[in-house]
Length: 477
Ligand code: BGC
Image (cartoon, rainbow, N blue to C red; front, side, top):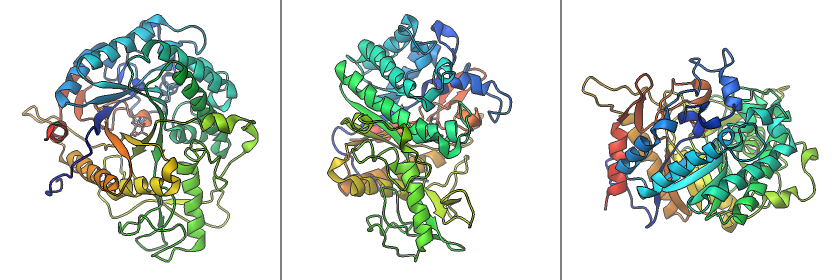
């Protein structure tokens, strides 16, 4: 159950939102001239997706967007974060904009505005046109240039109405899962050789910022996935880890601790492991954005792809840093001879979601104050662009879908946000992941993250009890 103390207040003008992504909800993968994306290719390969699902139909949002916007209006959100499918705009990855593709997002944006909901558009949420992957995808520099061209086309049409642009979603996850480990599209297994996919995404971001500004974009940002890092000492419970944007304590007492101080006696080797993981997951995609270049502790950093001037492009000022948070990461020093500079260790002692992710609201507080500590005045205002959880929600015989665990999850995490704001972190908004149950990448349709239950056989939408809870929170006076 959620905490019985009243939820603290949030600043005036705080944005309440919900988020989705194109491939996860739209379906209609062949409609309106859309070309294939890397996810169409990947999902069609046997064994890639847990339940064999694909995005072909998903939530059929492409056809049902008006019904979905009506749900958002009923929920009372002030902003909706969606993503634009690049292969709808450039079906073959190059060439002029596809009119039908632009028209779909034009209709969606107008529908949102007519309900008083601010459109927040992400330009890339992992669905690269397959034709560009065939030329090397994000491992090649050319994709960064093409991304800026695509951003320009979309902005030419929508910049007058989109309130906030997010260039990329979670470049760390895309690099690691898509190009490093191969568990996401495009299924490449470059391991630490995936670094060019980081650099070219970041370069594409910087070039796109310039393109968006040139079209008069209202505000521009990027969304990163952050995971505060906790040292799990051998044979002990979690110990305090001290510094870093994500570094943290389980006790919640020393989130602001100096880098290097430890209350749990973490060994030097454990701290080196923590710093390496923190550099890879958190700093690699934040330091260069904020003008600090790449962190040298990041493993696999081969800077030969970085050309003169790239870091300046990447450090173009942004208006917002999008923060996605799901859970912290446990690490310790690796065994001797390990190819990795850290060993990942499951965090024990927390409730778990159906993804088996630990539920750690303090991790969100720690990461927010950690970002503030690490980047100081250089940190742009933050939007929490994703936070949420998967549970095995079912619609009962009474037609209701009760999800008390999700209410508790959201309640706990929002209290953590309120605490961080109280402690001086400039957080301007919060978007629940996700509005709808949807295609959860490699997990297919087996994981439900929505405030709204979707019956995929009938496409019936059933708002869950968390939907009513969130609506009451948004509407409280
Ligand atoms: C992604 C979403 C995804 C969610 C839950 C984030 O990494 O941006 O697309 O569904 O996490 O796994």
